[in-house]
Length: 500
Picture 1 (spheres, one colour):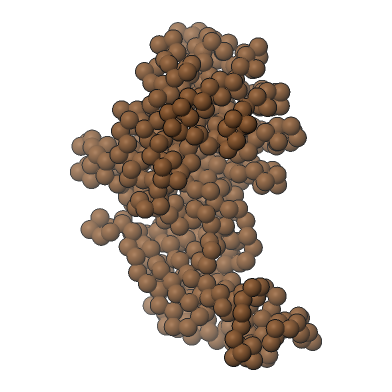
Picture 2: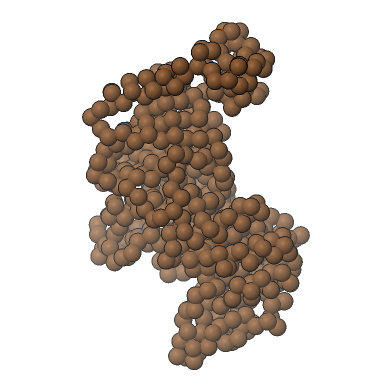
């Protein structure tokens, strides 16, 4: 009887939306990772003047901003005590301070990543990676006799930033230790990192800076050969708090997903700390490219990611415009770009949530015509849906709890409209089967308020009327008629009953 009722409800709902194609999405109660947040980098280059122009962070960061970012990545330049090191660069540790202060004031997380330790510690004597004629193609690596100096150097960075009013939340070991470059860089083999962490990471001053966390080397493609050795060594594992990497050359549901397995097993966070999702940065991204960005965010969540940090904040292919006219009239300096609004779907609503599995979770591959993910956050169920096609769909949601109200946040790329439109989802009475619109070429966030009075067992007071009429299974599902019940244990009138 139970199955017949559900089928009848679905048939009725489907009949009312016959004009559009229908996709059925079941959201399960199975919980996965909890999401720490989303962010971008405050680094040299497109952020010039380096970090001192705080307009991007003011637009992007904090719960009251339109975008809601809460993690900021900084470069730890190869300097001593904030001073320029051997004229290597025109920036130092002071550069990020103004922006970092604002992020911290708004409740955000700031972390630093070295592109290179000081040149005096390296085999080639310079912060440069070594891949240039001037260096004779000498690979720049951290000298083993300087391993013991590395973490004290990070401590000096933490001390400097604290003296400027910024308590840094985490430090990384190295940006792209597997990528030999002609700019600031340092190469490490996987076993180099194991040796460095195993024998010297205890020197990171967690007593003076009790909240600081250590991030693994951030490999170019988030490869297991850099993450698994650290997780397989008990001493290294005790020191590493966050397993991190980038996505260049590999989609999230490939290497990143594999690297997240051991990290999740040992209770470590998994952060994607750099990527630019535009193959051609010679133009302002079109709406399809921004939807591809949305899919990458979604796939990172499905891969087990707990923190996603984009590359530059301000660039015509990022979140805040640069003002360069060659990229179009919409590239206005310090104005939010469409990609920022796509990010806001995740940053403002998924941060702090726990991911739930669904019937349409992708487990491999890169990109799909439609993609989905779901989350629970307090009394809300959040469903993300991305449609890259020119076809409008109806999305039939089977939720794990009854919901009593909802909101639809929509981005379609139509420049004549608000890039994040909000509209109510009408629910006449609490239900867990809801039909919603999924427009063509759209990014959608559906937020539903759980009807806790009907779905929760523990800690919920039932009225006499509720007690007399309903059975609840041990997962909190309510049944109005005993004819719907399969054999098993149920809660009825506040007591456990056995249905045979």
